[in-house]
Amino acid sequence: MDVSCVYTSKRVDSEVTYDREFVLRFLWWKIRSWEFGADVHPTLAPTKTPVWLRLQSLYGSYRIADEPTMVTEAAHVAFVFLWLQVYASPDCSWSGLPDKGAGLVQRDIRRQQIIAPLACEQLSLQNCNENSICGWNKELERCQPYIAWFHVMKCGSTFGATLAHFANSSLPKLAHMPSCGSLVDEAEDPCPGGSQGPYEFFVTKYPKDVWFRDVFWSNSNDPDPGNHRAIPDAAYEIWKGHFVGLFRQPEVRVASAFNHFCEPLIASAEHERINMTHAVHQFGQFAQGTVTKMLGGDYGFFGNDPVRCEFRFADYYKTDRECHSAACRNCMQSATEKDVEKAIQRLQGFAFVGLTDHFDLSVCLFHAMFGGECLPVEFVNMRKSIYSKDFTKYLNGYEDPFDARVFQEASNIFWSNVQRYNVNAETCQRICLNSNATFQRAQPN
Image (cartoon, rainbow, N blue to C red; front, side, top):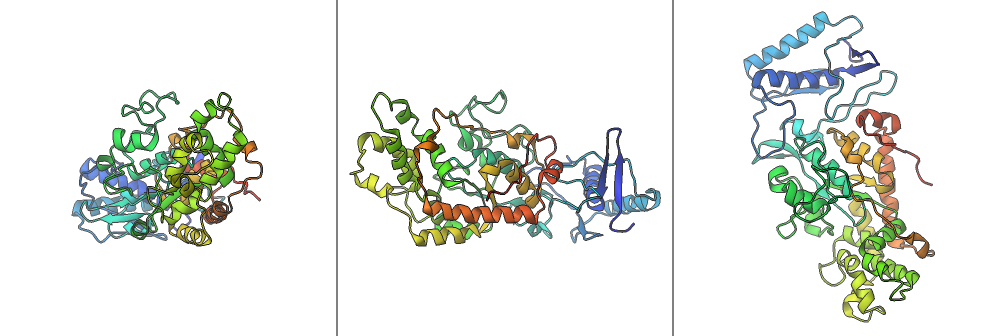
């Protein structure tokens, strides 16, 4: 059979074609389950799963990886390939293939071949580095993701569901970052620990040391992989090439952050005669350059830490409206040209850059780049903002010259990868089956 040969699964409603890569991957799981009775979806739970048999594709030629291999397994492989060569029909059709596979993308023979890479848990020692976000864990003897989630405030907590399911495919299919009741989901949305979002998920519901051992960037004082944190120089050097994050248009992010962090201030605005335009503009000064500073990481937890400043703004505004205190003035300290240059340079050390304004397309792009099964739950807006007012109108021409340049660079990286990986509405419908997402690709001017 030549390399272009495809196998066809004949169904009543449609015809789905599969290329040899898909066939080989499917057969590998079948052979493994025949020999060991193993689940066809290995997990990243903290147990050592012996995986001796690996089939690997090398542009149309196939071999058994250089690992200890049982004779019976080799016999299974030989038998299956002989069977395909002899009994496959002239048009290469075979009705025994499944309708879909985890993390694998069907091929339409009328278009360019689209094959998502194997997820980390499917790779062996020999080919673990073929997926750039993966690495070999010597202690656990497995290929696994290494992920540093750079999570700016109001920039997509929902994306945590994509990262979690990619890191451990044995999670319940509906697992997501909980909102504590905003979603109609009795099993996964409640918060028994009392905290919304990533902290509840990674600390209470699915403790990272059990479900995601050695996978995510965190530290002993901050066990939540999805927390909002700047990137210290030491952490950047360790995790360079494994950072992932979503970015948002600066002025839109500021309005969303004001709505979120200043809820008590907003509620008392009329009673305390607060000038909302003044409040929003001053919050904008607090938030100016936040993303730039967080990427650069040269800001301590106290003083002018950009995360702490946004969280504490409402308190400062009520007690120190003219910003006389040292703490308030530190928060008003501007980023610098050096900060911007450092932030833009650090974006080059990101494995993945997405945009919240194109969230569906970002999730699809992640799977196109790194593989893994794309699940419908990844597109559920876990913490949809509820606005009492449109705070963007109070910005009145406010601009963030620092974060604007960083966002432009992030946008350039995103759209370049969208083009490189041929991500669009049609290909994303194959990658993310049953997602009901729109996958808009209209690039902003």
